[in-house]
Length: 262
Image (cartoon, rainbow, N blue to C red):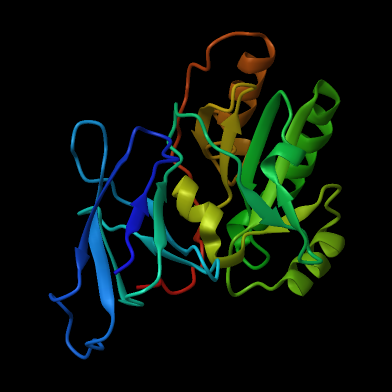
């Protein structure tokens, strides 16, 4: 029987504890297959929710993913008995350093974070149909125009499975976006960031550390805005100062995820 290789590309000192289960099978599981299950924990041994666990078939290079629940558990079933697999877990958390990731342009070409990042990078999840996200279209355009000359890079991402690239392209043209929007196939990136709504933003510094997470500002009604969290974070980093308000509550429409693989 081939072995599993568990390794870490974890952003917050995650531990990937796994258990091969060749005999302890779930109902209706093929007797000639096996499963692997375990728990993702942090450095203190606490279970980590919303970590993305990936299982890679090292021969066919196929990847399956599982997003952990509140108990940190994961489970993959129906695995070949003569195949070698690799396991890894990823989770981007405020204050932690991210690793490289990829998104897809609207022609389906993969583009890496390394190719898109700058000294300061903003990742914002957006939507075609969400009225809250659309209510921020002009504010996102203004942010892009105000901070791009200051060498801030923006990565706008659509992770909704219900909004194909063709719709994203038409929407961007209709609303007058002056920046590209990328797709997050299988909402892999949204899972890694644990992004829940649109719009939702993350600010990453030159060292790759997430320095801000949350809303663009605190009110859909521009007349009632009291705190412009995203702008405050960018201004602080540009001035070489610590970000005072590192997290605000993002609000909007839920990201329409695909079904979780088991």
